[in-house]
Amino acid sequence: MSGAPIGLFDSGVGGLSIWRQVVHALPSEPLLYVADQAHVPYGHRSAAEIQAHSQAIADYLVAEGCKAIVVACNTASAVALEPLRQRFPQLPILGLEPAVKPAVQLTRSGVVGVMATPATFQGQLYRATVGRYATAVQVVEQVCVGLAELVEQGELEGPDCDARLMGYLKPMLAAGADTIVLGCTHYPFVIESIRRLVGPSMAVVDPAPAVARHLADVLAREGLLAPAERGPLEPASRYRFATTASPSDFNRALSRLVGVSSSSQALIWQQRPDQSPVLHPA
Image 1 (cartoon, rainbow, N blue to C red):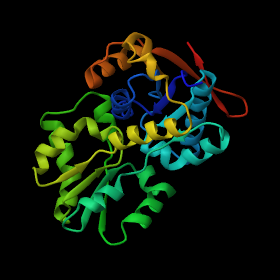
Image 2: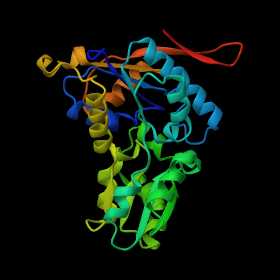
Image 3: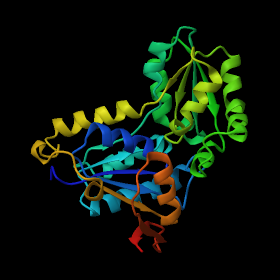
């Protein structure tokens, strides 16, 4: 079991921001990443849709023998994490919550901005996090409609990207925020553009490194770490990818975003008569 892969999934390429930190933190672990690009973005979808998509992917990852699952998507974590844990109580399943706690510790102005999708802001996980850690600060919630799609398209810089980002940043800056939380896994891929636009005095919090560290702690506690004598794995034997859309498009994004050249498996999304979705290899 300790030599089994870790499964990660997102609505698209955003979860690769978590994947690359897991690669760094756990060099001996095989990884299987699923991008549900047939349904990206999740941010405007209903809770029922997101839960159905997440369940189908988790079923696939379990069938592939994954020893743990990382829901590498803030939106899916907000609405599907607890149902997944109930469905697979024997499996460590980690999710994401916006990094409000470290942002509260960093802010000097007492104003924290959070960039996320509508579904993340509406989720119980986000509300609970804010209620637990941010009662003494002002939280400015900024819905970033279209930003995940921009990252999916590979538009990570340039005048159009800057203009879009400034539209999101201005309300938070006007409110006096000195700390910004990236509440979607797609957003770290434009973090350098954000930092350039807001200047060096603004703290921009990417939760991905903390997620990777937490995963390592959970695997160690559960006795699921890959054998230490295995050593770092070669990329060809370590990385597996699958997408519910175009493998060639995903492979180009993979190379562009994390510098990995690989081939991805195509997964066909089908709907059962009882409306329970299922993924099949192409």
